[in-house]
Amino acid sequence: MLYLFWLLRTKQWIKNSLLFFPLLLNIEAYPSLTRDYYYIQEAGLVFVGFMIFNFASSASYIVNDLLDIVRDKFHPTKKLRPLARGIVKPIWAGLLAISLIIGSILCAYLLDDKFALILGSYFLISCIYSALVKHVFLLDIISVASGYVLRLLAGSAIIGFDSSNAILASIFLIAIYVSLSKRRAEIILLGPNAVTHRPSLIRYSVKFIDISMLVLVPAIVLMYGSYLFGYQAYSLCSMIAFAIFIMGILRYLYLTYNSSLVGSPEDVFIRDKILIGLLFCWLIFSSFNPILKVIMGGS
Picture 1: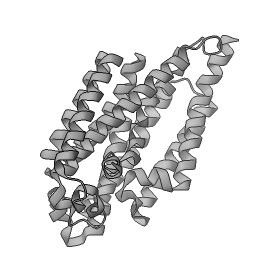
Picture 2: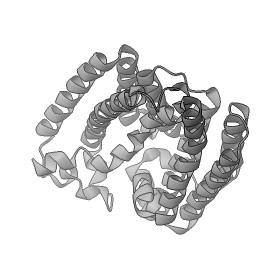
Picture 3: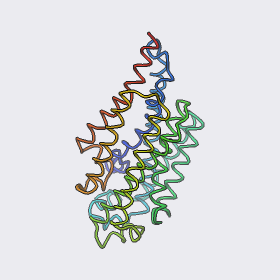
Picture 4: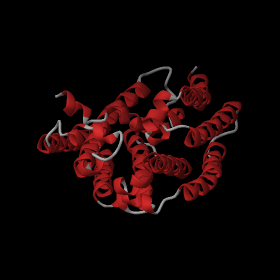
């Protein structure tokens, strides 16, 4: 049972925290925050959706591990996974994946129809990625990036608000940036064996990824800036949040060239204290101004 739980990759559930972002970005839509519990109720629903998405994403990870058993045996870290080590039989992993898929989709349908549709789309894209797309140059990172966008859309569906095109584009570009950074770390870690583990790496090169970074970093900053100052009123909190956001992007860029943590993006947001601090500060300044407006409006 312990090894079956290991298959869930709970550490990667941190990616699904994107479901809470629409709740944060649309906090001004709850003018009665200081007088009733509407916002708390919506937060509770998003948390339920977050847990459902966790189990759905875990199912996709199990499917990926089942398809990559042979390749993972030759990876320095992935060879320790239960399926690659032979500790868990594929039949049990498959039954667990099927149970999670059926359970998560049923629960998602009970929560919200649109949310269930997005969740189904996410799982479908994840399966196509694991079976085919992960071996195709550029399409692999685009597929991964679309998963992050679907997470944001899933959170929006639960609370009934639409996310702006600028914030969706920002998330998409950041996801591509993180995926390329991961590919770079894999090329350096595995060396000549990189292509054996991930065939698409034959088309990637450190030089190509470095040049792509030079394009993506300013594009991300400009896109997020267009959201922050094009869709919201100017404020000191927004300026501070924007400055912190830039520092966070530059911090991740620094880790790309100076740390092996980027080979596992979830580890970066768990183990790098500076990035954790920047993220925490960004959340404070991103939410402080709209919360202040709500409180003043409700008083």
